[in-house]
Amino acid sequence: MGKPLRPSGKLLQEDAKRHHRALLLQQLFRQGPASRADLARVTALTRVTVSDLIGEMVAEGLVEELGAPAETRVGKPPMLVGFVHESAHIVCLDLSREDSIHGAVVNLAGEPRTRQEVPLKGRKGEAAVEAVHDLARSLVATATSPVLGIGVGSPGVVDANGTVIDAPNLGWHGVPLAASLRERLGLPVFVANDANIAALGEHTFGGATGGGLMVLRVGKGVGAGLILEGQLLHGHRSAAGEIGHVVVEPRGEQCACGRVGCLETLLAVPHLRRRLEGVDAPAKVLRRTGQRLGAALAPVVGTLNLHELVLSGPNDLLGGPLRDAAAETIRRNTMPVIGDELVVRTSVLGEDVVLAGAAVLVLAGELGVS
Ligand SMILES: [Zn+2]
Image (cartoon, rainbow, N blue to C red; front, side):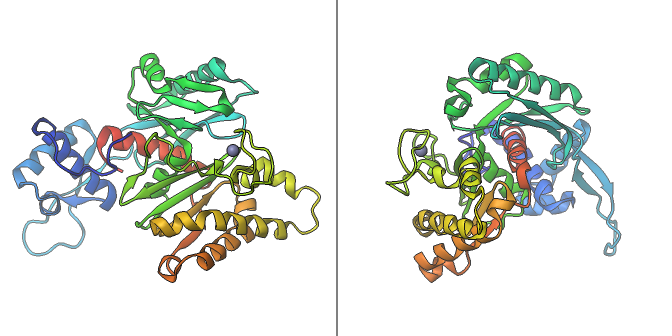
């Protein structure tokens, strides 16, 4: 990572062609089929450049000619070209679930073609790395189109090279996961934090409407991914969004990280399910949790003027009273200009949001589209 989500800024001369290809692919990916003339107009590239690059991509099978649209004006109807979603496949891995690794082969539209799941059975450290390698290899073998790359969402802090700096749940400290997968499988590999790539998945495939986006991943742990001005926020040491270990209850429960009363001790799925066990009025517990979550998030939402807050995790916990109470609390604790248009919702992608984000990592890294 570390790259802009969308190609922008000055690029070196030798990168110009790659940049021009990415501009065209981005347009076709986002807006659907277009004529060469339309592509030249919206990308400000010359007709000759567009024709040459489209010709190349048609020969590669990445783009196809689709014929003329049904309604055309007088004169020769323009030929439309479109992105071929099955021209390549992407292998996606989600390491953020409780004690299992989920994987999928998806097409370039992020649609799963095959899925596989491997129970971890408590495996950690090197044994967990081996399980990831085995699943990636197995998924690559099931792809029916050339594999563009491998995208991995890992819990914990992951640096720009795809090294997992710290993931206590997997017993990983300084594990060069991207490098070892690349060496073993000979494919481009991108590894990033699960909450960060959930934000990418939501941004590209989940119907995010633009404006600042925060995706709060709630699973075994709690973390957030932020997309601001169209770019993923990384932070000084790649740990942006680590709100799960911000203390919200100084007299609360002991957290796995060593502090007391982290947001994670209120909200993580195992903690929340335990608090709901045998309770007469679960809605009341969920409401109260939502209020505390809202109080913790209001300063972030207010500081960044976020447009959307997406809660990602089990819908029976996060939808309903918890979401509503969080939204009310944030609105009460912030200015109307912040709260009025704030959208608080659950993810339409459900638990697939990390796999979708893993696909976006590869699309952005290899084709420059997102
Ligand atoms: Zn903690």
